[in-house]
Length: 569
Image (cartoon, rainbow, N blue to C red; front, side):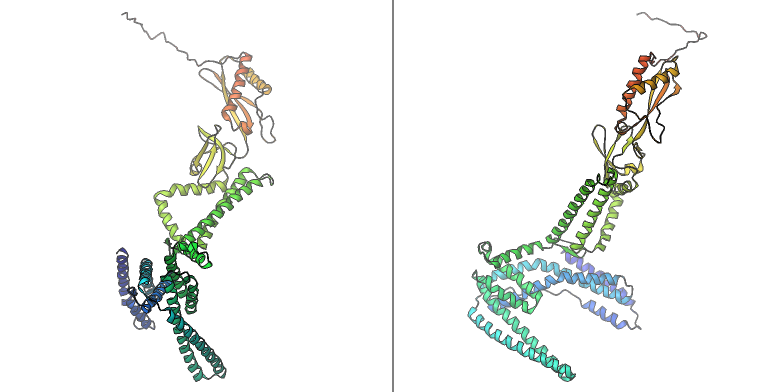
């Protein structure tokens, strides 16, 4: 009911557009007659009613119905390709803006809707037609003796007619050489009549073979699996599309007649029937994308190509990492090459899979339009992270192996940058998965962007009255004699340790030890700072320099009287 309602509504809309176009058809033009002819053709378009007689009890009527059903199956099989061709014409006509093109577009749209409706109807009705016709088989008596006699007579007649046709073709060549137009026309007419006679004989021969085969099917005689070759060969002589329809119907009847016994009958034909049934299931339409019907075979091929692409991508990443040391490629560069190549391979696999199963890549514009709507409502973050990942990979402001700090409590080494997120491993061996857009939108401290050398500032304080020159000398001497790791020399940087007097605080004279470290010590700031603080504390204690407690002086002015009252309970 819903399909019918949609179809009626579509016809109403076409009718409305058609009336508007009729008013705008210019009458004094050469295209007027063509436009009016198209309009009349549009008005006469209507679905063809299904006509099949399933209430059959006689041999002749049953065979005719069987052939008629094969013709319906042939029509059903041809409709998808017809709809595809019409839709291509509609796409071409959509690019034109003249009245004739618009009328043609309406004609093809209406024709496409009619074919689609017929396709849906046949898809529902054909299985029931097959079942009803097969069940009627038991009520029919077949005269196989007469059929065998007729087959022999028809074969003889067919050979005679073929011989006569060949003679006519030879005559036609002779008259064509002589350029005798009257004789050519006459012989061509005879050839047409002879070909029509041959076609009728082939039709009759097919029906006679069907009588023998249907009788074996009715009796569930295994000879039917041999006779069907004669049926199929006779059908192939008529038309290839009709042959496929007859083959489908023959396979269906044999499956119904023999059922599970096909497994027991160990013959080439039974195996072929089983394979045909499997192939029929694999080609059952699942859903439609655009103008393309997707079957289990298409879906399986699509998945296989994607899986192959995934395996190739994984092997590519493994290969890049394996040659990293051989060609002295840094870990960050190898990760960039591996990730970009991997995603490129996956994308190409997806596009190839779409092309192989017959989907027009231009139809991806529809998917892109749908995605844009989704992005507007909820996929902004996903797309933002995706784009941010691409920026990070090419900009390389953050790369694999860098030691970064996002906030006061979040720092660690970058171990992977993917399209959606970046993985950071902290010193506690905890992996943090952070969306890529966080690195683009927020401030990030990269401790090792250019190199892995970092200067540490270690603050400490001594008591008032301490000799500040002695403090500096004690700390530098202790640093020189300690086992704490720091950089002593560098070709371009001044890495000399320094002790700086930075302020006179409330409770202490505050200093700062500035020292350069590199490598793993730069990536463990708390542990490294702890080593320096221990060294400073021991050096100050050994030198007798006081490390003050926090203190505060309280001054009381004599001019302000005050008294203390003690309340005794």
